[in-house]
Length: 460
Image 1 (tube, rainbow, N blue to C red):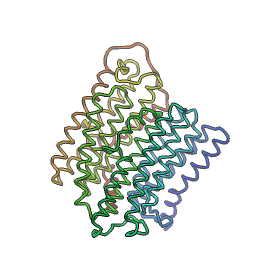
Image 2: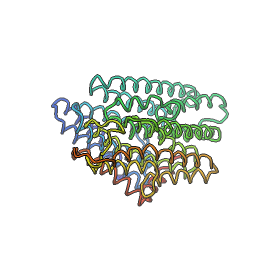
Image 3: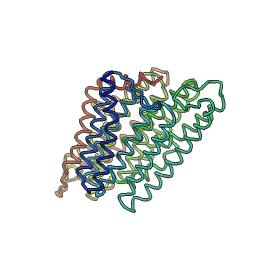
Image 4: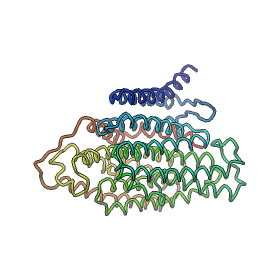
């Protein structure tokens, strides 16, 4: 009982710390207070999530929320990712106090989705994440307005569709709890399910609801893009899992084929369009779309092995994409925005060139890195479930991705350039942490597999 109360305190305390420190920092104009308050909050949350996962606790909160190892897995992911994004923002944002405040609100939204036992916290969580992320862009100048408006419009559309889907099943589930709806609902349930897939397609960057992603990723500051791609989209996958496997579990035989098709076309769409991209932000935007397709593979499989693989890859890709946009933001600050601009990057800064190469190799699925093992268990779960074509198409897409990653690598290691660029310690810290995750869990994947498997055990 004492352990549960301590874990509950560690889970709830961070939000008060983050909001209070952000408000005081805005008032006092202290950037460091905002940073240390935010980092303290997310570290406490990560510690609380670790306790919940280690002990397998299930802690109810306010009737609408329950912290389980599944929600703790995503809370740990959100905490770690938020800490890295905060460090990047501290380096590059002149309005860091305001950024930290909105990031705190977004973090609350992530927690609501992660711990949701009802559809209502999911709706509120998406509202907080979308609006807060849009304001993170807006506080950084009028040139970010287009990206912020697009995010707000499409995010609002997704939330509206989600709410309408919820309304369809409201009379059959007045509490809106994440419990299975009756199978006899027939076409009502199928229409609601289709609307949920549309709404969450926007949030997870699944085809064909992801056309806005490249524009927003390119228009936002790189550290905001890192938060959007590395944290927000990953929490959205949890919402997808909660809706499909908690509410529509009786309809699995109907929807798994739909998710399988979504996985295939999302992989193909992202990889094919990434082939012709020259701008780095747009290239990695399409790359992240294809990575969403890989995550959908395990969800389409629907078995414990498939869901474990999806959770593993969600965790792995979160740090890969945050590491990428940390580097892209650094390069952008030195006028390097396109693949051609990366010429001779190795001679200008060897650490950046090698780090970017390692992260891209992991995304492509090269052995020895976490991306390879993530794809391996994803495709293996598909084969075990008899979904051979899904696995084959996934492997082919991985080969396609090697081409556009190789373009950057080839440019980086071409001719020499004597003009060096120096990396600062903040970016270096984030990149080193991302590389540590990529290499450690690539060589020793079992601890992350165990975490993902324990979390997946709480999915019906």
